[in-house]
Amino acid sequence: MPFEVKDIMGRVAIAVLKEASFAEIVDAMERFAVGAVAVIDADRRPVGVVSEDDLLLKEADPVRNSLSIFESRRRQWEHQKAAGVTAAQLMTSPAITVTPGTSVRDAARLMHAKRIKQLPVTDMNTGRIVGTLHQRDVLRVFTRPVEELAADIRAVLPNPAAFTVDIHQGVVTISGVVEWKSQALALTEQIRLIEGVVDVRSEVAFDKDDLLIAPSGM
Image (cartoon, rainbow, N blue to C red; front, side, top):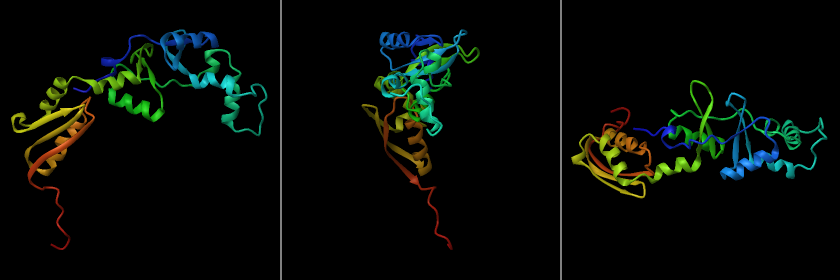
């Protein structure tokens, strides 16, 4: 069964209010040893995120109060951020969030696509923050006990006794025989989708190639 965010997320909501000062944001990052914090409104709903990169603009941007119409929109935005003193002024908005029911695989794809290392987790009904998903939480899926992985793999095999499965550091090597080539390929993909599988090396043989395309004119 696919892992969901609720299975691995941290139950601590790492967040600050919109009115939080620069110093309070830094303090929260240091206290929880994180590189970003969610910014929430009075109802505990995430409205943005302040990252270390946002805070570093204070030092990296020497021109904080002299906006120019000749600068790009992004540069003007960076100047305004560098001049900010509260979470609402410093944050990147909107906040990118997941819910407890989001699959870990989808959360991992989101982290990779957005290049972020943590996500606020929000209640699907209220929108309020209920926890935080860290990149290290997602990576922990790949350290599942071998016995758990083997059980999940056996569950997708049409006849477990007809296959040999070897697991080493998350890499699954499977051998056996099926009737059709398409079955061998489908089985490989099913195993690859199991949470914690790093890769699949298929040695599954087949009796008939149902994917062979006959040359035209025959």
